[in-house]
Image (tube, rainbow, N blue to C red):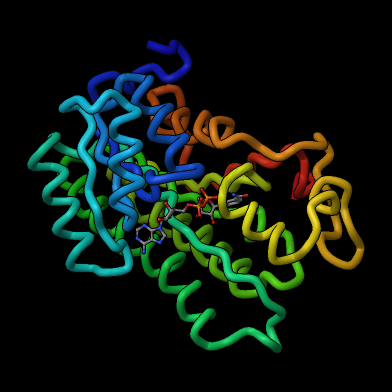
Length: 262
Ligand SMILES: NC(=O)c1ccc[n+]([C@@H]2O[C@H](COP(=O)([O-])OP(=O)(O)OC[C@H]3O[C@@H](n4cnc5c(N)ncnc54)[C@H](O)[C@@H]3O)[C@@H](O)[C@H]2O)c1
């Protein structure tokens, strides 16, 4: 077992958004650290591929679920605990990004952004927290974004949704702190996944992400490269491990300096 993720072996984790991208990286990291894993996503085929890549054993169970549906989320969490036992750690990674200036942005895109980003974060954290409460143990991590603190053109709904997640998780952390349950966010900077490939395609640029641009992203990435999903997963694994037992109500930015420490 990796020494840096002490305490994870044999514990039960739920990772949402695990069919690709950062969620897939988190699933790989937690599985390597010895967690028994439930991986959840709306993309059943992607989940099957990830489950196979993790060895296809009984220690990984895949759940195809739309995390914006409260009944489906509650059923999924109940099924996870029936199959694997009480959930010790949640990594809620699901999120979408739709691009457009606010004056041009459709109500449909706004609603989709807030439903999939904010409502789902609420539903999943609520369902898992309700089960952790009587047990008085657990760690919850939701993925926000540097967009929660750094304004970006054509990302008004996305920035707003991520700020909502970050603040809502702080309140949940405050409510659960007396019950020995920690709640944190991890905010990645630009990470090399399908979401960023789609962003680059729709904005018609890529160099500006790293170098900075007055017209688009005011700041670039001081470290000069995109993050790898694994680098985000490292921080999530740390927050779920017994090496972070006094750490709660934080939003940890993992962005190669892109938010200039804001
Ligand atoms: N990639 C980045 O640069 C970056 C930066 C900051 C934050 N983030 C955040 O990290 C998270 C993961 O991003 P990513 O780049 O891996 O994205 P991605 O698009 O590669 O993966 C998102 C996953 O969420 C799943 N999903 C979408 N809607 C769902 C629903 N209703 N129910 C269940 N699953 C659903 C998708 O099927 C997909 O597997 C998101 O919350 C994103 O906002 C990403």
